[in-house]
Amino acid sequence: MSKPFDVERRQELSIILALAGTMMFIIGLSDALGTGFSLDGWGFWIAAPGVIIMIWGLIWLFYYRANVDKFEMMITEKSKANFVRNLDDLEYVTWRLPSRYDEKLVEKKKEMGVK
Image (cartoon, rainbow, N blue to C red; front, side):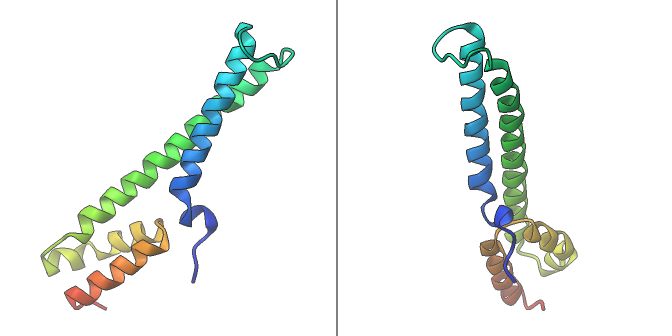
């Protein structure tokens, strides 16, 4: 079963959101300060959503990277007992990551002899 688009492309989407929000903020701030772009007074209305979008993208990126780091830490477990003990958490983290991490988990389960 394939995962939703936003799960498969979370890293790319979060970077695009952060960059788009940053650009909106810079353009809006430029208009509000009267330098560079002229949006006929719409600068604030471009900058405010830009900040929100930028923060949204950065938070998404932070949580994605945290999940990847947690997955990498848990998948490198050498002990079968610890691996089995943490398997529920590992499967939950994998569920929130793209399909390529599912494949890594299946390989690790085969290596450890876990179904």
